[in-house]
Length: 88
Image (cartoon, rainbow, N blue to C red; front, side, top):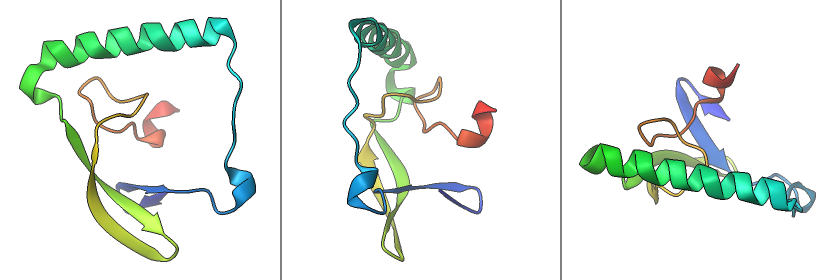
């Protein structure tokens, strides 16, 4: 979700919102290649790649600013969260 121009990370609203997804060997291989490319981008940026990201986390109706380790599978070229508005 979003508040203003910021992104909000939240857990699914119900237990049914949590899913286990089976991945084919082809998809696993693509994700491993993606990780390798991402690690190369991280190495190329050096100290400019953020180790942590400031995010807004929603728990119920409460919003909290926090820092999380930068361990997202998909990120921008400079290691920040992808804004869904930029994926159109």
